[in-house]
Amino acid sequence: MIAAGMSAVLPPSGMRRRQAEPPGGARWMPRIVAALAALLLVAGASAQVEVALQPEDMARAALGTEPGWAGVAVWRDGQMSQATVRRDGVDGRLEPVPVSGPAPLFEIGSVSKLFTGLLLAQAVERGDLSLDDTMAQLLRGKIGFASPQVAAITLRQLVTHTSCLPRQFGRLRDMGAVVEQLRGWNRLQLMEALASQRLAQSAPCPARYSNAGLALVGELLAEHYGQPWERLVAERIAGPLGLRDTMQQLGANADRLVPGWAGESRGEPWPMVAFAGAGGLRASAQDLVTFGRALLAGRAGPLGPAAERMLAPLAVYQGREIGYAVFIHGPPQRRTYTHDGLTGAYRALLVMAPDTGEVMAVLVSNAQAPLPEMAQAWWARRYPVSDQAVAVDAAALPPLAGIYEVNPELRLFVTVVDGRLQVRARGSVFRAYLPVAPDVFTRPAGGARIVFERDAGGAVAGLTLEQAGNRYRATRTSDPAPRPEVLAQGRAQDYVGRYRSAAVDGVTIGFSVRSEAGQLLVRSSRFPWEPVLPLQGQADRFRYDLPGAELQFERDAQGKVVAMVLHQRGELRATRVDAQP
Image (cartoon, one colour):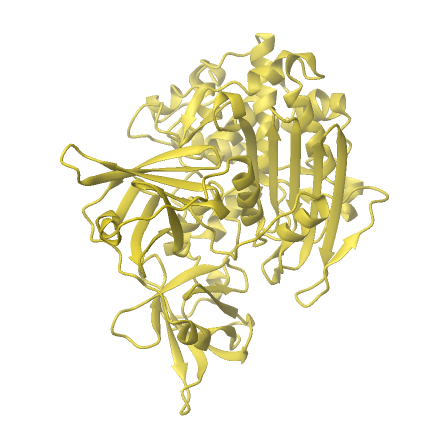
């Protein structure tokens, strides 16, 4: 999905030497970029959600307690059903929106990549382009490449994220620069960055998400056909399918774009130019369901053979497969096709299940809304795991504790608390797993299954995580096993509440703290829930997952927590203002 779903809490110009940088600045960019690449794997930082199958229930779950709008459309059992809900403001009441008149519009972020993928599939089906065409061939005489490795990148590698290109061009030091590139770059800037880009190795690389790569596919298609990407979408996809609500430029429809939010703060739309092919469309949930149905109809449907071509696997992508920019989950007999999206103030998800014919689109106008958690509950139903626990010798659990690495961006932390196996990924809290067989554990609520693997000598050497139709292999590292970091329930509740800082250059920062199973989670006005872990031997002090950011809570003479101080390249003090988050 689009990187940098949240903008910096404090603007760069407002940073003072002794004012802390709220989590999400330059040093936090890798964490956020990695997290937005996909739905959370082991457990999200937000609270668990139970999701019924009716659109209104799904919309309520997707928006959670956040302000904004949520729209859901579902094609199931041969009919379309839909619902929209809204909450006006932080303290507003969640209300259903009558289904009448023009549908509300949302930014769909990286779901736009599916339209770019389909345009490429159509071009290949016609014989206009080949997946093996290189950028040197497609841009001959138009730009010079500083790197032969970049010149040799193919359309296949661009559309499957195996091109070795970075997520964004350049060495961007903060989220503001990422957002500026996504929102502000024109075609000339994109091509200049491509010309100067250098790579240490030749493609293909192991799949790594790249907005730059799909933006280039969009621009290469526009260059080949001599038409803007937006017009190609309108003439070759939206028009034939009757997608009247799908567009890049809003024009007279500007008032139909629902207000965007980033947590408790108002968010701004992200108009895109050069990156439109990676995330520039606005649409309704109903239009996305119509689009998904046309793809599932295959060669017999309105899109013809290109739809079938688009959904065919082309490469492996981090535990699953990928077609023409579409993620492919599950085994061949029970595949699911998906993509999600995230911009500065909107979230989106499109899911297509060919075995049942179900198509689901969920759109939310708050970048911090718990749509990933709602989706996780859906995935748990789609690919259920055993909930039948078996007896296990308590002595068999400690040898499983350790740190396991899927890739540099995804590590799984395994520990034992009160005789139960607990697992978390970076950015999430520990959650208990059930023993269902020797060396096999599940978390039914998240649809996750972990199988520990042993070497010839019987020592635990790795694990396999299965979730949402994906399969991830992790190797055990030599790092020491994580210590249990769970607070007594009474102590955890001491910190729960709302906190607010003094104004810094006119900006007031709000923080919320909540507890889940004895673990604290904190968020700021514009940044999502993040776990904080207690520092051993230091009273009331906690650390974030990445180094360089810590929280110190302060107590009054009666021992009540009255303030918190964020330490991150300075200090930012926030006073407690409410006992409940």
